Image (cartoon, rainbow, N blue to C red; front, side):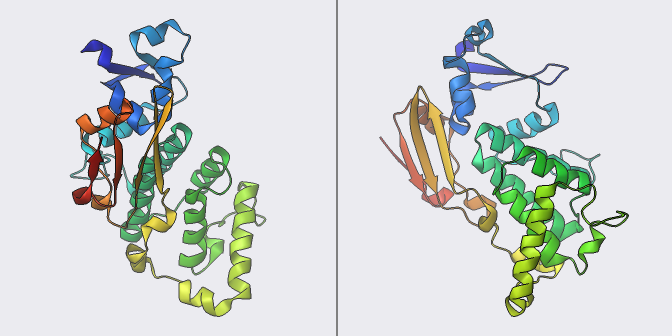
Length: 269
């Protein structure tokens, strides 16, 4: 049993998280190769060190792996002491973690949570949060697009974002300023379409969240590539959910999986 488990040692304080190797491998190509291709002695003990990552983020990742959900915020949640803006920051960290380790479905969960935060709480990204996104993600990722759209399509005055700055853009990542100007330019040259796209905050709950989703889940294991395709939808419950047994077969390269909805999932050997 022990050889089927993987232990993650996370952060400077070396917080330990342990779960099944094959399930972690299914969700991330990083974990699939971390043991097999590592030359460190720790790999013999199925141990992976992640010193640059946050235990809080990995804790949410493990919750998602085991329970197919993240912890939420406020009273009644698994994170009762977290306010909406802190949870915004946590979901950004979750998205960045998913991008770093190749976990698109986790990124999609973070996108869903961020849209819900904006719709329900009017929780708006802080300048430091936007800077982190642009500092730690590559150009073209969906989170950058979502943030830019929230700013341009939802705010009556973009200056609300830069309140207190002595000059436009001061203190913001230059790539964010570029994306913002491009988005505003597109709005200016097609004013009618822009007005049609403008949304009240309450209407963001009707946005097709799959517009900001990563659409392919790729699992790498045992030096082979096994891909599970699914069609994303606005409803989180429509995501393809795999049992531990199916995840094990996928990790071993013996199972091909396709499906559009949980209830329609199909396994074939």
